Length: 351
Ligand SMILES: [Zn+2]
Ligand SMILES: [Zn+2]
Image (cartoon, rainbow, N blue to C red; front, side):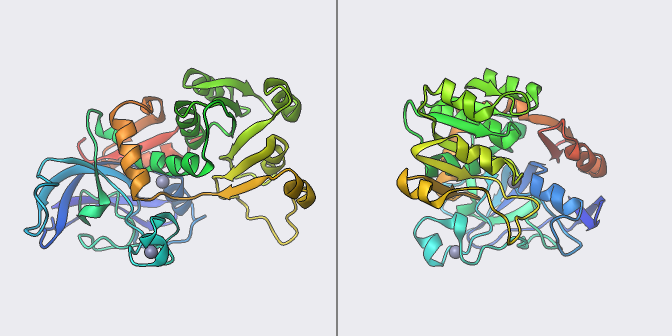
C-alpha cells in the first residue's frame, strides 16, 4: 500500500493508505521522496483557500521514477531518475500554453486529480503518483529536501525573467520570506545590486549573506529617502513586492525609477475593494514610463532552469528547509509550517 496525507476538513489532516498504482502508456510512475507545505496549502488548511474535501494537496514534490510505461521514450527517461514534478495544472492545448505561457493557461486547474489517487488535489502529499513525462524535470547532486524548492524557485525564475533584470540594475525586494529570499539570490546571480526591505532583522541578515548589498527596516528607516541615498538619486529599475499587504504597494511605487518596473509577485490579502486606491498618479506613470508587471506560477522553461540552478548550487536553498516530518506526523508538520519562524516544512516519505 501507498501513503498519502489527506485533508478532511479545515485544520484536520491525517495519513491514509491507497492502492499502489501501476503505470501504462506514455506515463511515468514516480515514488515521491518529499513534498514541501506551500503557503497555498497552509491557506487551504486554515480555510482561507476554499477546497472540496477530502483533499490531497501539495505541489512542491520530488521523487524517483519507479516504473515507466511501454510508450515512454527510453532515450530520455529511465527507472531511477530523480525528478521534480511540475507544470501539472495547465491544459497544454490553449493559445497561452501553445505559446509557452503555461503559467497563465486559460484552463488552469487549481484542484486537479492525479489518476493514481482516490481524491482530488495536486497530489504532492502522496507517495506514488502517475505523471506525463512533460511534468518531470530531472535534478542532480542535491538532496530531495533541497530539490523540493525547485517549484517555488521556478516561480521566482519566472518573476525575475519577466522583469528582465539587467547587469548593474538596482533591485528592491520587499519582504524577506522565502519568496523574497529567492528573489534576492536570483537577481544577484543576474548581476543586480540588491536592496531588501523587511522589519525582521533575522531574515534581512540571511538576505545580506546571500547576495543582498543593503537592508532597509521600513519601521525605522524612511524607505523612499534610503532608496534615493543608496541609488544616488536614480531609484530602482526593478521593485519586487513579495508581500500580501496592500499598504506596501505605496512603498513599491515610491522606490521605482523612471522607465522602471514594479513586479507584483504576491497576491494581496485581503483583496483590495472597489475603493482600493494606492495613490498612484496615472500621469506620473505615463510621463516617467513606469511599468507594472504581474507574475504568478511558472512554465516548462522556468522549471528546467530552476532544476538546473538548484542542481548546480546557483541558488543556495539549505537555509529555507526548516523541518521535515514523516507522513504519520502530518498534523504536527502543518502546525509547524504555520509558524512565522519557519520557511519550508516538508512531508518526507523516506522517513
Ligand atoms: Zn507553492
Ligand atoms: Zn492551457
